[in-house]
Length: 344
Image (tube, rainbow, N blue to C red; front, side):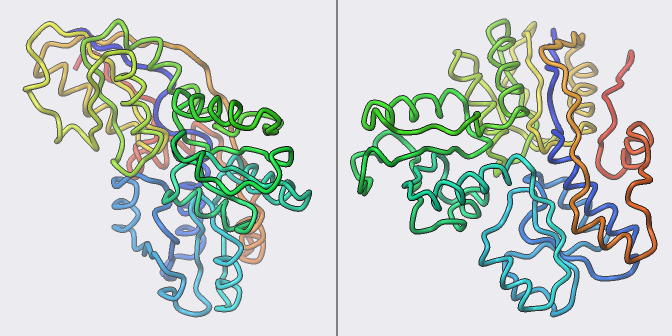
């Protein structure tokens, strides 16, 4: 078996930041209850690892005791959620990915300018729910081209489209093209709303998959960007399987001698990729080739709300562990270390 290991893969800067927020709070407030609104990122292993350390994940703000500490997940929340947290006197720490915040700010700005906003994305995804909450009277969600005839448009010359950050670039392109055909004067955002990590991981799959017989994507089923990676592979004619970890690997997917693409969604820990690769090596005699398609060096700062809390607790947020040190410290908990398999 020949294993083509895609790079980039796995954690993006927004996921690193969100996980770091929860990790810092656990260190800063030992023994104190810590709550997260929704999953911090869409990966069951990340969530379970935090649950084992005492973090409680909730789906309703009302489930958080008044005065407790609450983290907003990487996907962002609506103003209504923020207001409810304030009314309950919660210490709210915002771990929203800055690229999601960018879309929120665009929605607010365009709504104030009197635009109707067509938000391309999945209506029930937490990111879309949060974005829509910024201007509910101005935003309509478009999930597919077939939704376009049913849109309620007041002025076709006063339209703008925005997108969910984790969409398939292929699918988004189809919908955006359809919107432009239906509304030739529709305005587009100053820059693409689909995040760099989503774009890079999809481009890597699009480039490597045609060389392969099978694609394996590490990621949870509720991870939009992970699902999109399987779709990109399938779009170029290569069967793809989304698995949470090596325990879901099925021998029926292989006949012998395949070339296999291995990648991971932006919320999937790297130790899960390592476990999959080790199993493919041991079980099928696989050999690994790392395919570097893009180099990523993006990092996001800790949110201001956390920095403020750190200062209140006597911790200087500007004295940070160096990046390698952070990987070493968090590796056992989150699998955030670079993949090293050697000859195993």
